[in-house]
Length: 94
Image (tube, rainbow, N blue to C red; front, side, top):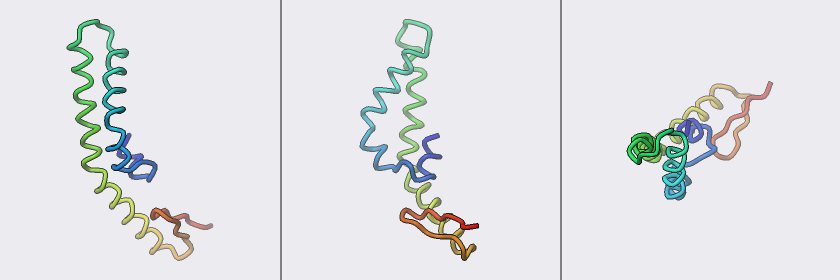
């Protein structure tokens, strides 16, 4: 889901990096609320893979952003009626 938001240009890897501390806190709190047990092992078993995926999104975010920009440029190049806006977004005019 986060990679999709990075691809769409809503988030950047820098934003995710800056909000890392809040994200880890929310991962742990949500894991504690979602799991029905009171032992600390089960929420951690859920939080650790989610934290790994979050860090992987930060790591691969620049690659996804470059792919998004390349896709937008290719789309606008192939369609002469497309308008380009800042951030590499191409809007196709009908």
